[in-house]
Length: 215
Length: 109
Image 1: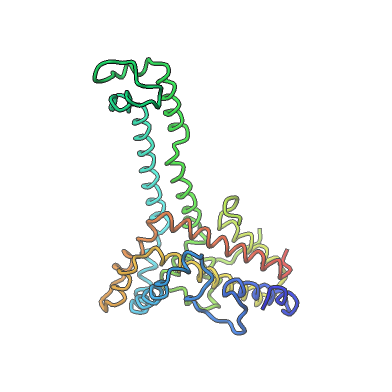
Image 2: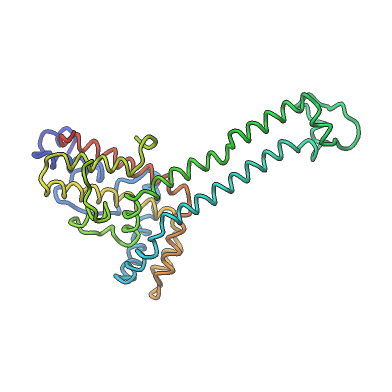
C-alpha cells in the first residue's frame, strides 16, 4: 500500500497516522497488527548484519531463562544506566584530552628530540644551518622561522584540541540519548525484555508511568 | 533530520504535547502511543545487539545456569561504546521524524 493510498483510503486521522508508521516500520502496511522484531526498519548497516537474527533469538532466550526474577534484577542493576554512560563518556573524553596535550608536546619539542631527522628535512627550509649533534631548547625557541611554525602548531592544538572536540561530539550525542529521561526507561525496558511489552502498557514504558502534560 | 537542534527528549515532549492537544479520543491517543513505543523498541534493540559480543551472548543463552549478574556484565559492553550511542541517537531521531510526519498525515498541527 502506497503512502498516497494511505492518505485516501484510511478513515480517521488516527488510522492515517498509524498506517504511515506501520508503512515506515515494516516497509508495508499490515492488515493485522504484528510484532516481528526480527524484521524491523533498522539502519542499513544493522540490516546487513546477518547473524543479528540469531543474536536477537539468543537474547530472548536469555531473557526467558532469567524470567521475572531476572527481569526485576536487571531493572535494578540498570537504574544507574545514565551515570554509567556518563562516566564512560568522561573517561573517553579525558583520554582524548591527554592525547591532545601529548601531540602538542610533540609539536613543541620534536625538533629537540629528533634534530637529526629534521636537519635533513626540507620541510622547514632545511638542511638546518646548525652544526653539532643536537639543538638546545633555547636555540629552537629563539629561531623566528621555527618559532612561527611551532607557535602556530601549539596554538592550533591548544585552541581547538581536535581530538577532545571530536570525542566530545560523540559523548554529547551519547549523552543526549542515554541521559535523556525519556530514552533511559525505554532502553531499560528493552534490555529487560520490554520488547514484548503489552500495547496497553506502552505509554507507561514510554513515559515512565507519568502522564504527559501539555505545556 | 533534526538531530542537532533538539534533544530526543525535547522532540518527544513536543510530540506528546501535540497529541494531547489534538482533540483525539483517549483510545486513539493510546493507540498512537502504543505504535510509537513499538516502533522505537523495534529499532533500538537491533542497534544495541549489534554492539553486543555475539559469541558471549550465545554462550550465555546456552548456559542453563546463566545469572542476572553475568547478563548485566555482558550488556554493559555495548554501553561502553560511544559509537553505539551515536548510531542509537541517529536511529531514534529517524523514528521521531516519521512520527512527526505521521502526525501531519493525521491532521495534528
